[in-house]
Image (cartoon, rainbow over all chains, first blue to last red; front, side, top):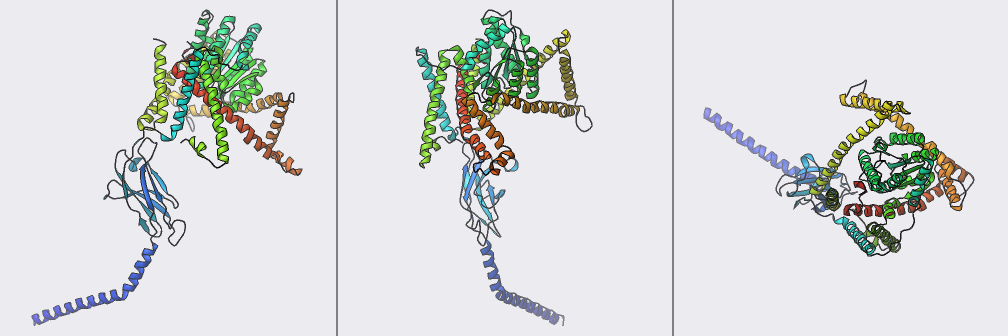
Length: 408
Length: 213
């Protein structure tokens, strides 16, 4: 009886399994068109993948950067599967796990992989990339690699600068050699520099001091170095005439160099006893307090001559006008183009830009100095020729002259 | 030797910095950053010299009771106070005393000096813009056009009277064509002059930074 019961149970179980199987089969058969249709619809939601993916070491950089470029998906910018963005994915092995390192918006076609922290790119290490295109679905480009990042030893886009610099150095050498051979190199008269002796003479006659302002530049700036040369010349004259020279300094290093320049100038003319270090002093490294201090010196000491030579900013007109109010003759010069109009308006003589740099050549008349000055002039001629040539060629649609000088 | 050694250092370091400009490699970038740090350190040492000079200069004036010694006293007291505030980092109501002194004393004083520029520009313009010669007359006319073109009055004056070529457009033309051309020409000359000066310093031709010898 029990055995009969067991057999009946087994039969029922077998039948229920059979029924279940039939149910599943019929359902599958019945649903397969629906499923097939859904599968087809899912495939049609996949965007076209990004193509032509390339990864190269970023050129002209110190390393740790790889640039990835690609052609955007055909569905980017419209279509049924309008792309919403791209994901840049990276792995360290071809068969490794690709991680998203950057999510970008639609229309993007390049990315420079140089993130810091977790996603940092190390030099001389293999990396593989692929681009995931996102729309309603996602699709993947083929993986590319390996590519390594490394630093370059020469910036290829600065070739033209290197060639121009070497050409200029050659011109300097050539004209120095010419000058040493005794050839007369003409330098046009510069009013501001010629007026230096006259201005110092005026101060001596009036028994008033000379104020020399080196500007707000630091000792390493070209304008300040050029100003030191003129300071040496002025200091020699004041030593000869036994006039007082006051040099308020913006930078402590400038003060140190100025003291040395004036001291050497006094020694050169045999008057080291007259040199007074107290006259060359540090004021402050703040722009407007410096201007206020110098204004105060101008109005109290009432110098007969002011030299404003170096780098100046907004305080230039404050200094020049205060000097005008004090009744001094003023010789100024700066390489800051935006301050030149103020000096030209308020001062008696102005050295415009490179005239300040030419002062050393003009005052010393040394062959070495004059040669460099001539090289500058001929370089300007060369630049003018290329400017005119470039303007003409570009007007006719020829751009290689202009492109020759593109940098960066 | 005393003169040769600095020249050699100048040449070597200058040449290296020239080469560094063309080398983007990490080694070059690291050297450049190191050079900048050295400049800052040297600057700090030089600051000590500057502070000594400042103190000696004003102390002498106060001691000798020279004219204006009160201002020198104020300078020394101000210096001492800011030094103490900065060193001890004393906290005030909302910020440190150092910040309070800077924001409520230094900044207004510097702004006042900057504001003086407006009056100095007016006085300089009054002296400079006079029709004495042809070039001075051209300068005067250009200045009038540019000044009017930058304010609404220029536009009002022009178009109110039905003139098609407005003062603002003329102002823009003056600034962007002849003015820009001359600025660029001067800048080109300055650039070449800087290079020439740098070459002279590198080669030891220009030695004014060493005291002139």
